[in-house]
Length: 272
Image (cartoon, rainbow, N blue to C red):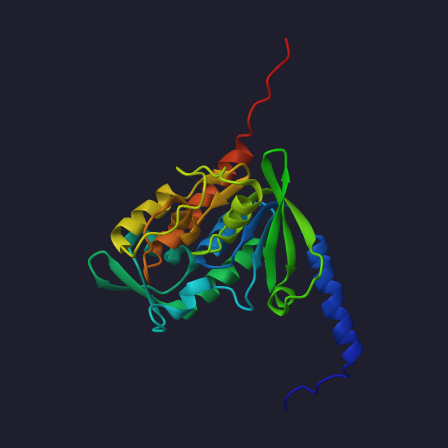
C-alpha cells in the first residue's frame, strides 16, 4: 500500500518557498564571481569555480538554463564535441559516442541537465528569470551587476533594479554579449579589443571558431571576463554552430583564469 499523504497546508508551502528563496538570494548578493548566462560555457565555468570553493552565482534571464545546447542542431537534440570536449563531458558523466575520428556525439538534453546538476552540486547557485540591466563600476573596474526580473523587462515596466557585488564578472550571454554591450554603451569604447568595442562574431566556421574561442576567453574589461560565444563575439571570432566542445573548454578556461587571480593576488608594493 502506498504511504498516506500527510496533512498539507498551502500557507506553509508558500512560506517555505519564500523564506528559502530569499535566504538563498541574500546569501548571494556579495559573491566572488557572478556569471551572466546559464548556457554550457557559463555552467561549466560555475562548476569548476564552485568545486574550488569559490562563491559563484549564475544569473539566467530565461526560465530554463542551457542556452543553445538544448536544441542541438536545428532542433535535432544531438550535439557534437571534439576529443578535448569529450574529456569534459566524461568528467561530468555524460554519455558520449564515437562517430568518426575526432568526432563524438552526445544527447543534448542529457548533457545540459547533467552539467547544470553538477554545477549545483559543486556549490554554484543558479537564479533563473533574472536579467542583467546594468553594471556597477567603481573607478575603472566592474564591481557588480544590476538586476531585475525578466518579466519586468518583457512587460516594459518602470521598476527600479537591485544589485549584487562581485569580485569578478563573467559574460556568458552568448551571441548578444549583453554585459559587454552595457559597458560599451555606458563608458564608451574601452574594452580590451582592437577597436575598444564589441567586434561582433564572424560567419560560421567551426574549425576556426573552436580554436579562437579559447584564445578569446580572457579578461575584456577590468574585472570582466568573457566565455563561450560571447568571447568570439567580443573579439571577432567566427560562430561554430552545433559543436559544443569549445563552449565547454572555454568555460573551463575562464574558471582557470579567475582561479589563478584568486590564488595568486597581485603583491602590494612595500613603502620604503
